[in-house]
Length: 158
Image (cartoon, rainbow, N blue to C red; front, side):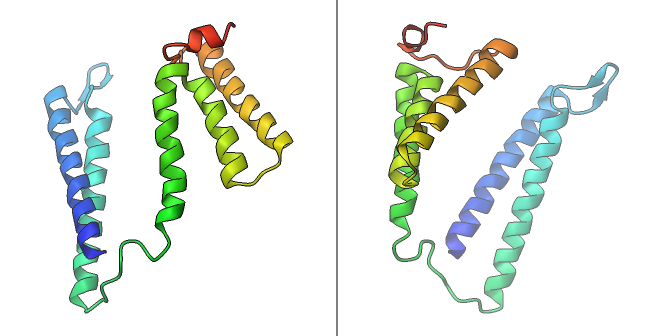
């Protein structure tokens, strides 16, 4: 667990440093007309570095005191992780083909029924209402089209 904590803290710290460097390149100050392009990313990167340093400090302090080495994943933890990871990966692949709305409906239906063991009526209602709400909110109201994939425009006629 210690190695994983240190690795992730260093990885996130390097992402924060990368964000800081690029924010400085873009300009991170308050300009004449408001914040420059790198203003918010600069502070987000700074926060990421501070949090990573905090995690790193806590890990070093904990293990210096003689904290026991615990496993990254306890026995039997891989199955629940795969129940989330595999359907999510399939949803991403399916999104490229049928679009986000149809993929979200399929993902919700599968996950609610197979993992949550929720009844068919609730599963079908939620699996239809959520993607339709996303479509109305983003595509129609905000005019921000979500990914339609190769066949998505043909599957959703409205």
